[in-house]
Structure formats: structure tokens, C-alpha cells
Image (tube, rainbow, N blue to C red; front, side):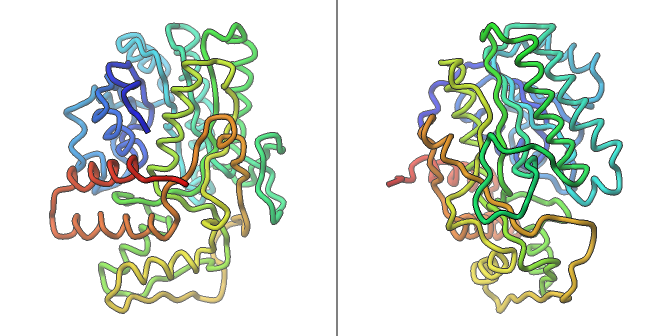
Length: 353
């Protein structure tokens, strides 16, 4: 995992104030990249972006991805050669409450950033980060492949399916010469230190545990491809770098854990309780609450492994332990920058057999 490629590269990141964006900025700033971030104010309070010490190391611009004029002006000023698009409304249940906003952000936001690439020029590598939920989910026992049908069910998943189609259209219509390599990355569920979002299982576990309450699990039998946040981030960097060097490698890539790390919500919560200790426990109401969500979802990640040599480094239980480690340090007001840099270094040094 050599990050020397990124030294002095001009990188434009949308959604940099979010959970994944803050971790990515920390990685790239440490590698010496020249990073411009464009996003709304951090979506949570507290926020990882505010406490991880990265804001002073990048050019952070607060703006709405739906504001095309402001986005293009920022883009022209930064003159990026690599773009990683992560700005989104990312919560499934929130998309039922605000479907129009979800589509405006996730679909037209993608149109707007691709318009920047088309109009301004100079970009050699563009990556649109979507989700594993873009597929028409038939609850199959096997993993979905990149060639399977896109048709997310709920407004969030469907808007991300639309963003995939928008990206493919722009690639074929405006970038067919190959001068700008364009890919999408469909990542599974991520966990890690600093995720303060509501309606996500590990943050919900942490909130309950910190209050010494039992964790309430909405659907303990739903199965998802859980992975530490550094797994997809390093996959994004790998895709962006490799297609920068060879445009023939662009395409769509699933990014997820090994099959053994696709676990149920109940099993994941068990892992959390063991890592947290203190007799932490969980319970379920016995009734699945809220709007429709898939019960079973798994990705086939053989393409990124075969074409780019990607291999997951931390299993799901280790990812949970790293999350608890980060949280314990945060709760005692320890050095967040240090724990993030240590975990990044440990991830990069992990030997994969």
C-alpha cells in the first residue's frame, strides 16, 4: 500500500466533511496530496471532520453539491487531476422522509460534478462512489456482480442506481476518447471510529453502551457486507490511481469484504458487545420496524481482486475492535489524530496472505 503516488497530486473530494470523507482526507493529507474538499457543513454534531485535525491541512470549501455555479467556480480554482465524488444523502430511512432532496443530491449532484469535469477539463481520473444497494436485490444467496441489473428499491438505493447510469452516460457521451478515466465503486456497509450518524448499527451500539443501556436491534437477521472504513477508502485510492496510470482499467467495481465477513446484524452486535465488555448486551423487539430494507445482501468482489490486486485486510471482528478502540480514546478525550494515524499505519502494514 504505497501512497507515494499521491504526493503533490491535486485531488478534489466531494463530501469531505462526512465520516468517510474525513478519514480519506486524513489519509491523503498524510500522503502529501493537495486536497480540495467541497461539501456541506459536517452532517453530525459532534463530527469526525471537526475533531480529526485535517481541516487545516486541506482547502475546505463549504458548499452544496446542488449549487452548480459555486461547484464549478471551486473546481476551476483547484484545477484537480483526480476527483473522488462521495457527496450524498446516505441514509436509507432518511430517503423515505425526504425523497426529493435525496434525488436532487444523489442524482443531480452527480450530474453537476461530471459537468465540472466536462467543462473545466484537466481531470485524468474520476471515481463516483455509490453503494452495494444499487442492485435489483432478489435476496440471492450469492454475491451480486458488476454486470447484474441496477434497480435499487428505496429512494436512496434507487437514486444511487440513477447516479451509476448518469456516470455511464457521461463516460460514453463525453469521455469516450479515454483521456479521462471514469469508474464507479459500489461499497458495502462501513464501520469505524468517528461515525456519529443516526440509524446505523455501530453508532447506535456506541450510544447505547455509553449510556449503559441495552442495545435495541431493529432486524437482527439482516445480512450485510460489513467492513472497516479504511477498506473501501484504500480501494477507492487504488482504483483512482490505477486508472490514472492505465485508462483501460476503468469500469465499475464492487468493494466489499470476504464472504466470511458478511454477517447478520445480530452477529455484528454480538461482536461489539464482546469488544466493549462491561456486560454489554442487546435485545430486539421481535418486530421489524420502519420501511422496507433488504434482508440479505452480498457482493461478488472478484473483479477488483483479479484486475487490481485488491485484498481486504481486516476482518469484521477486527474492524469492530478498531472501532471500539477509537471510541474509548475519544470518550476519555485522548489524541484522536494519533489513533487515526496509528490505525492507518497498521492497516497499510497488514500482511495479506
